[in-house]
Image 1 (tube, rainbow, N blue to C red):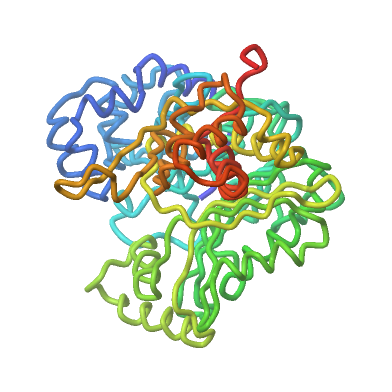
Image 2: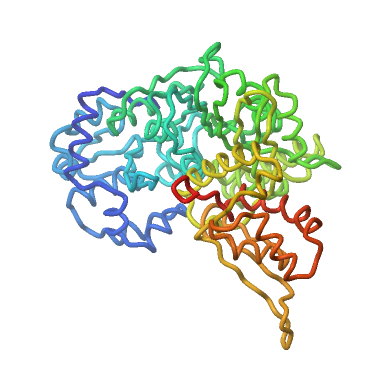
Length: 511
């Protein structure tokens, strides 16, 4: 369903929503945390019961545009006096049926936190399965889901010029990008998605987003960007007529070929030093490692790329298929679920897929030879999703500085232990020496590392005063070991601690 983003009507709607204090915080407070959590699981009964018979604008709008429940015409007119119901119909987001107003789109407030503080977006999208009361149509335009929030939080919050949002959908990544970028281009194969992206840019008073229709990089052929972000349609879906293919998640290719195509094409659309960030799936096929497939994609890129790939989880074929069948609105035990599951498992069996990995990808068009090729699995809980972009930016800068330092230069520098690092020691009863020493990170990826006494002592002593080499020499003396051998052992681990954020370079005014 296409919305009609008329600028004047959208401005009137935005005015009315602000006047109603239509925010995520106010809505959550209106129906309570428990009902809000239930709604996140697809259950709206608790929220409706909590709102009761309230007729104030906030309650009316929350029922209509968040929960998808028709509302009395008089209540909607009172809640939206500027745009009115004629304006809602002209915009295509609601319809009047007698004395009732029925939502044709969802319109949800979405809070966010970044380095500039807290903010709020208003995001329009198609009705979900809760509002529809059944499975989603193939051309469904998704609102802000978990993957969208993850990628938005991963975006490097560094000022830049021109950004490409590849597969923009409802436009959430382009909106986030415009927080730090001069302009953005959003592409999508779905005309309906582009209409929603235009609508949402107007609704949030964000300009300089150029929206273009087409598949993958076709709409930007020959162009380069300072930054590329993408939540591509990476879901691995059987290519069969009896399996629905949703525009928002299915790229129309076999297996993980869509993600491979993004790896292959992204480099030529980046300026030198330009960075791409996106999410993806990759298959583990019998006898092979999924991350090795990703390594091959990077190595075969026609443009030299720095790469940092972080795998967050793996699912077996049944888990993966069940997740995405449910996402499309078909629940276990319902008609058609078993047939869809068999179709997915047949598809995986054809390629001998044993597991599917999911993760975050950061690629950079290298200037000269690539210096960063990092492929890792990090499944620890993330302390604060919104902080990952700043964390990645700092770690990338740390890598670049380390790449310019040989071991002698690194040993000559002082380092500082990051303030979020804590140490945990595990002892057997009655034993003075610890059996395990663990360093834990309170921000970023929340990493936990087991270290030996030498590294633990070094991290504990890094206060920006003494050089790393001097600390290693002192620790060697304390442990009664050869200083040269300890230095050769510890310095590579110091590099890893700097790249992952446990240790930091002192700021210029501290050095």
